[in-house]
Image (cartoon, helix red, strand yellow):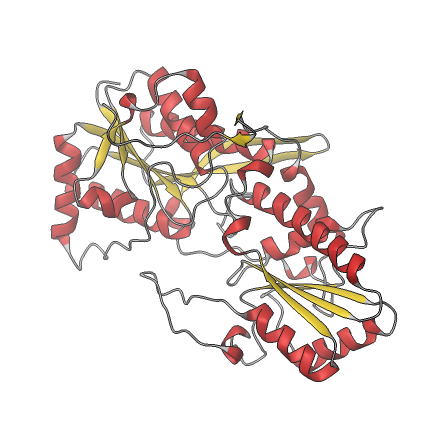
Length: 413
């Protein structure tokens, strides 16, 4: 390859998004890229002329190894929606002028559904205008809601954290439940897809009963039935633990969190901020049943918990980043790397490339058959799907007992 490559990160951070970046950097170096540029804060920062030469910052094998274990977005992320091509050609010409200036041949973008929308638009514009650059996406989202790919890098580690944290919450609640009933509501990320919330079922085992109820957004939520379920459970046990997706909705399509507090915030992609589901349900149970309640939001803790990251997830994220460089160097354009599950026992997974037009803006939901008929739990098939993704650990490199992260020091030259 004679030209350069540029890579950016977009959307919500994960525990392994930087492992994909490490895969991009290492593979690009191995394949002889002239320069490896990093966009600062994704396409939004790039439009402002913010980028760095990554060879100044990621120089050794140790840097690569630390980067693989560093959570969140090393380059900085953004939530920036490019206009449709026909709406504003000026912004696209600005982007391509910068790419031409830097002699960029390959553009790699690591992100989720909205990020793949960016790859779609840029690759289409390049084809229409005859620009030579190739655009390839690397999947990233803890939500696991990207179409076609078996699963997404970031999901396995988030699921591992959720299963572990849920188990610890259950232990805590059981330990306190003596003279008073306690109902604990755990709120887990998931707007329309319940992949993350379903992972709470991983807490169940020989040493733990697991959550008593699990509610995903794929099934409509009935507050009266929920209250009765909790009431019936309290007749048999002192502690009840419930896992709910932040995006559960009533039969008429209204988010449960809006019943308690509607903050009205909407991001650039039209996504409404969802928060307060657990608090509303805890308050409802307390008012209806008169028992002690607790509302717990895992919030951002579940997406960047690199101290508990899945080694399987880290390795697959790294492989996906490398596969994107390989695909772009070999002429693929308007594609996304996907993960293909070859077998479950033993678990084997490979990478492939797929048309991003069939992935962007398509949301993969939990199959209905993987949710119990009454909508209060997930099936054994769900657990079998997720278990291979959380296996093993890649231990962080500690300094004085605390994990060391690779940080982008812009004063370094």
